[in-house]
Length: 125
Image 1 (cartoon, one colour):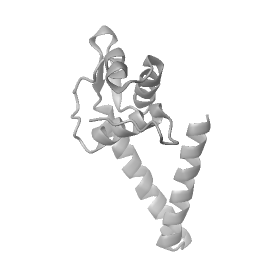
Image 2: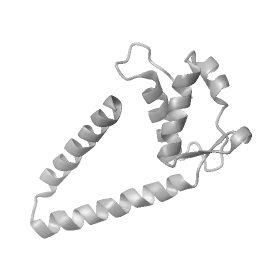
Image 3: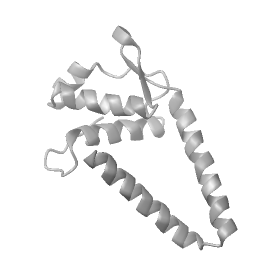
Image 4: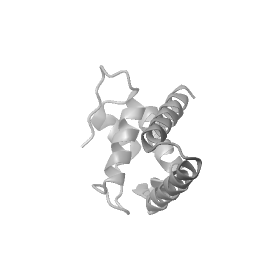
């Protein structure tokens, strides 16, 4: 179930993208699940077709969904590869932090700042 909050400062496409990404990552949308067609989802949510299209494009760029032409968009197995890539990067970061002697609390603050910067940059860009 997707809920778009019109009063939210977060743009509708980002609300949709984030909710679908979360459902894919927590596996409530399983690999191979067909997503609703863009036009139908836009109508169901009261959004512009371009808004839903942008959310789908960003999910596809992130490797969470794949579009198979007229067959539609599906939850991709590549999402699992993306998750493994994130785990690998986290392990590498942890090794660097340990090798340079940075406190784990500070290391987490560094990550949170970097994620905040990346999210702000993505929203602006």
